[in-house]
Length: 218
Image (cartoon, rainbow, N blue to C red; front, side):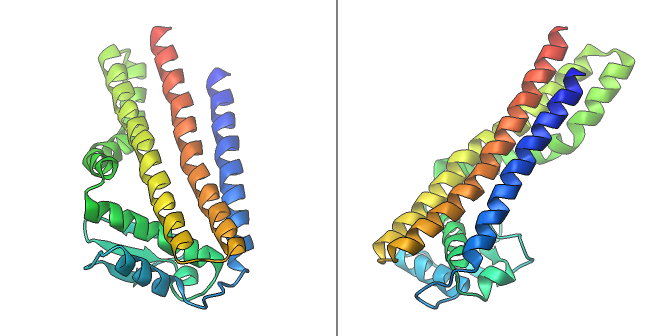
């Protein structure tokens, strides 16, 4: 019963965060940017303003906006890449914030990149190792599974300052270029909602980790 309660709580947290961010993205997607420039153009201008070059800006899949440090490239959704809206502007500038972090050697981004291979493997493998350990009553495997999940949680914790800082850089840029107050406020709402998803993920992982540690003690 305790585990199913945890599952329900984490699902509620995830669904609430996802619902909120989607509502904010859709709301400000309908608000045109007074500058009239697309997300791609906004990204190009912010990169130039920060003196960052060599970053490739590509049209990606819808809902998969991200910066890839391995290729030093930014992928923007078609609704961001091709359109002019508050959501497009804020999203593009946020991803440029990550590109600026990479160019300037931002430490939390370096740490996250270093942890990523281990966290990626652990996120897929820990549950199987845990189940095998429980079924065979091998405490060593249970402990290994918990350590692996702790690596996943650590990755999510390190992700928080990386995401917050990228949004902070985006907001600083938009204020510096004199974006109208209403659009600045809208951009902040979009970025705050997106940040909430990372906070929700970290909180859900923390609850899961505490449950695993409690199970180990029992």
